[in-house]
Amino acid sequence: MTDKTTIVSVDLDDLTCYHAIHGLAAPPTEVAGLVLERCLPRFLELFAATGVRATFFVVGRDLQRDAEAGGTGGALLKQALAAGHELANHSFAHAYDMVTWTPAAVYEDLRRCDVLLRGLGARPTGFRAPGYTHDPAMLQQVAALGYRYDSSLLPSPAYYAAKLAAIAWMAVRGRRSRSLAQGWRSFVGPTRPHFMADCGLWEVPVSVSPVLRLPMVGTFVLGGHALLLREATTRRYLHLELHGIDLADPAEDPGLAMLMKLQPELRTSLETRLSRLRGLLTARQGASSIGGAFAS
Image (cartoon, rainbow, N blue to C red):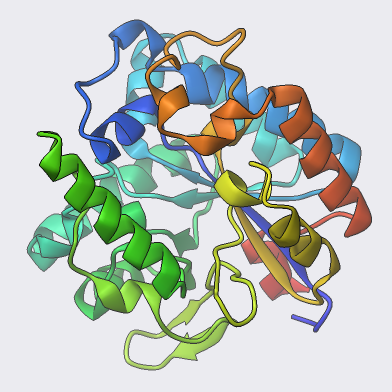
């Protein structure tokens, strides 16, 4: 990697993940494919127009459900591969407590997602943990798959503190978040890519702002935080993490009414979010996937 690197990754978490975070009942089954079927095409169109090659972190459970429902999302992911994007492993079950599982259970979960990705023609070499929460034992199982990198580190103590406050507030209101309060080490550490000799993997952290270490993720960068957007536009090195829901449209897409109150980016119009992301990517003159950045 050079010192003028722009990396973009996108977590394709479905609505079930967000309902779990916010302690809500599972969403209706008819909106299960929203991220893969409606949000993913918007990313592909925007990335094609701005010269971006991104890493899409795919949840195996969603990919399996999509195949059983006709494979619309899988076909789009094949298009992503053909366009030069990277598909990476975001676990099969997207269980927020996966870090508490036995090594054998973690390996089997990751292997199931890996098999599905390879069925699309991908050759995955990277992983991101659900909710970022990971530890050395989990990363040993990532390495056992022959992967090259992990990208689960979000070195933002401010994010972790906000997460704890949100979990506590939900508990007071009688809701139980599936997010884990443990795992603080997932939110501290180096801000640049580094090699972890203990597991033989590269770690590629999500970028954070200077000093306060606010996360460079779509929720905040696209949701109206002007200082973060400016920092993301001008910094020399950027690993921008987006989520599929960042390009969801409450005016057109079903199943978002409850989340609009809880996900700040959804209170900004899709047109505005698209404009901000297009401007950011144009100013940075495109971007590469994580795997592509290592290859350059």
